Each structure stands twice: as structure tokens, then as C-alpha cells.
Length: 309
Image 1: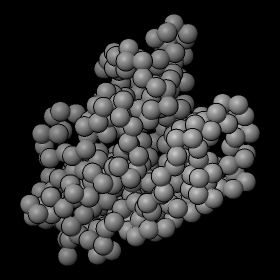
Image 2: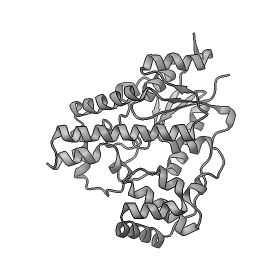
Image 3: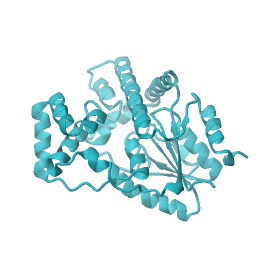
Image 4: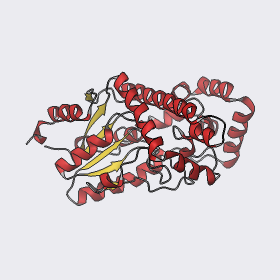
């Protein structure tokens, strides 16, 4: 029996959107976004959101629906996604949840605990501590009480580092412990999952080529418009891969080739972190390791022969 919900995870540029759209056309499904950056309306090109033409081929949900000034958490995404999945089921259609944000899938399949509210005073103190101590010392202090969070939070991610510390400071319980409790949002027999993991060389080449194509397609105009809004640098979208590097060029601090090279390197680093996270957190998910989209589709059909005509 086919599942009610299909889950498709993978690093950036791995082919998730193409596979999700092909599956949606095959099963008459609707696609739900599970990428924390594609939630936002401001950077369609830089976050590689589906194109308008692709969105006409199947219903798409939670893509480009959030303003950059409104920072969403994994809990907020879950509260938006679950009613969406229920509505799709009520229409008698399967849902395809596709994206690269591992915590979204973890919330669906393993659960997300309700973390107690943190007071404004504790939040302010945590931020002040970060600014006073610097990232290295602050991360070291966090690592002494929550090594899992200190290890998984990317370099330069002040927002998540401060969040992890403030939760511990307020509750005396590590954020990682809170996140490991709770009940799965999806019943075990309602979903089927797959992870995309193409060969590293092919993945990195696709990362580089896609970013170069974004520049040719006008991504600098997107970033320029975002910069003009003068938003808080700690907002999630302001940390999207490529924003910092392309913004530096637009401020006249680097040449465009230098900015592109730096952004490509950051994209490859991000893809590597996503892959590492999947190997640790989604070890039991079947993998598609083909380098191209047609090969991935053939592998997907081999895992799901009922879909073969």
C-alpha cells in the first residue's frame, strides 16, 4: 500500500525538487516545503525555490509564504505543516514533503518537545555573553553542558548558539535533551522516506554550477533588495548561504568573481554539513546515490515498484 506521506530529504543541489515534482505528477500529490530558507519570499533564486512554471505542475505549499522579517523556528514550521498535511489527506491526495532542513524531518518522524518559555532577561544575558566572550569561548562554554548542540551548530550561527545556551540557562536542561523528547508528529504507518546522497564530486559540481547560474539569472538584484530592508542580521534569512558573500560584493568590498568563489565554497560546506547530519540522524532511510535526476528516479522506482506502470 502506498503511504499517505512521502518524505524526500537531501543536501542542497542534490535533486530533491526534481524528484518531488516527478513523484507529484506520478501519484497526483501535493508538495510541502521542508527547507527553512525556501519558506521566505525574498530570495527565490538564491534559495533555489521552485520556479513559477514548476509550481503550476503540482500544488506547492509553504514556499515563499513568510516575510524575511518574521523569523520562523522548527516548531512554528511544524504547526503550519501538520494542518497542511491533514488538508491534503482530506482531499484524498498524497503529500510529498521535500527539503534539506533535517530538524523539520526529525520533528515529523521523531517528535519535537515543547521547550519552556525563556524570559527576556535570560535571552538578553545570553546575547550579551556571546558578544562579550566571542564565538569560540561561548561555543566552548555551551559544549561543556550541551556538546551535541555545540557540535552541530554551524560556525558563525550566533542565533542558534545563543538559543542553545539560553535554554540551558533557563531550564538547566540542554536544548539537545529537550529536542530528543516528545512524540512523532506522524504515525509510523503513514509515511515513507528517502534520502538523496549523490557522489560528492557530482554534488559539489552542481552546487558551483547552480550558483553561477543564479548570478546570471539576477540573484544580485534579490540580495540588493534584501540589503535595502536593513533587517536584523540575526534573522534566519539573513544567514542564507550566499547572502554574506554577495552582499560584500554589492558593498564594493570584493569583486564579483571573488564573491562567487566564496559563496560556492560556503555552499559546498553547507552541503557537506547536511550530508553529515543525514548520515547521523537518518541512518535508516533508504538512499538514492545516483548523480543525475533520471538515475535517482530509477532508483526511487526500484524502491517503490508499485509506482511503476
